[in-house]
Image (tube, rainbow, N blue to C red):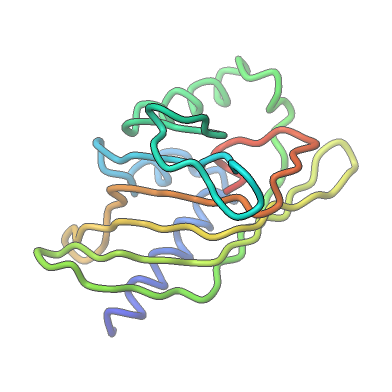
Amino acid sequence: MTLQQSIEQFMYRLAELCDDRDWDGYLDQFAPECEFHIPQWKNEDEVTRDPKREMSLMYYADRTGIEDRIFRLRTGKSAASTPLPRTLHLIDNVRFTEQGDGIVQVRVNWVTHFYRFGESGHFFGTADYTLRGDGDGWKVLRKHSVLLNDKIDSVLDFYHV
């Protein structure tokens, strides 16, 4: 398998784990120190850059933020996500650059379709990942996802992006 194929297969698998609600498998793809960020738009052309000083739609400094969200989903303590929507993540245009020491920067385009309470919706955007080689696979060190249709008329959570 080429490096391109390996990265693509990882990205597709990550989406599949989320759609299948395999939360243990999904979490296992993220390194404990993984940063997860969805910036907010400042204006039509610029998003916020520093999640510690500017507003974000979502920011977790490490994997514990995603772990907490999954705990809330599993225990029913997330009223906004009950019932949990059905999702379908589509990943496309996977490109990468090698950084050395087993680190790659990956950029993808994505669309997530979701269905809840008899209604369909979708979110779409781009995502930048920092991946570290881990045996035969990868671990996410950073996920930075830009939501392009940021008029949010429903719940937005980690499983949407």
